[in-house]
Amino acid sequence: MYQWDATSLITCAKFQIGGRLVLDYALDVAKIVITREVQQETVDAGLAGGYPDAVVIKERIDAERIAVRTVAQMPTPLEEVLDLYGLQDGDKAVVRLSLQSTDVDTTVTDDRLLYVVLRRCGCDVLFLPDFIEKSVAAGIHDTVTGQQLLLAVRPRLHVGFIEHSLRRLEGVI
Image 1 (cartoon, rainbow, N blue to C red):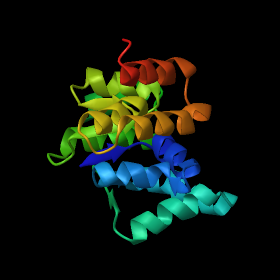
Image 2: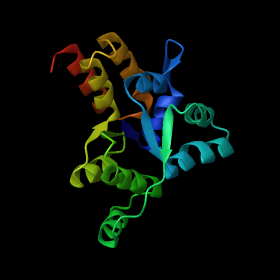
Image 3: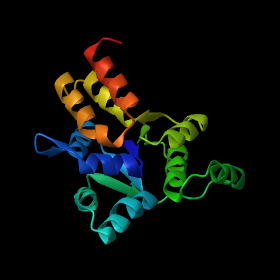
Image 4: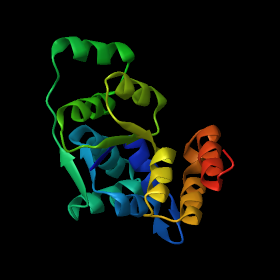
C-alpha cells in the first residue's frame, strides 16, 4: 500500500492521458492510503473551493479505492522537530502515518521538504516521477505510458525531475 501526500494526489487528479486520469493509472499500481488531514486538504477544502480534482478524489474514497486513516500524535520530541521543519499539518500527518503503519510500504510525494524529512526519519519515500518509473519497471505500465504520465504531470513539477525520469525510461542515463 502506498501513502500519498496532498500535492501528489491533487496533481494526479488534475491531469489525464487518453481520457483517463493519472490518478487511475496510479491506482492500477496499488491501493492508496491518505491521512484524514490530507483528505481535509484535498477533498473538504477542495469541494468548498469548487475544485474538480476534489470531486475526483472524493469519488475514489467513496468507492474505497483510496483509504483514509486517522493517525495519533508522536512523542513530543519528534513533534517539536516536525514543527521546526515548518511542515504543514497534512505533511506532519504523512510523516506520522509513515512511522506508525506497518502496511504502508512507501510514501509518494512531490514535495522536496517532505521527501527529505521522511528520508531523515528512516521512511521509504518516492518522488512522484520515481513512482511512475517504478510502475514501468514492474511491468504495470509500458514505457510509452510511463512517458505520457510524466509529461501529463509536468506542469506541476520541477522540470528536472521530469526530464531525469524521461531519460531514465529512454535508457540514456
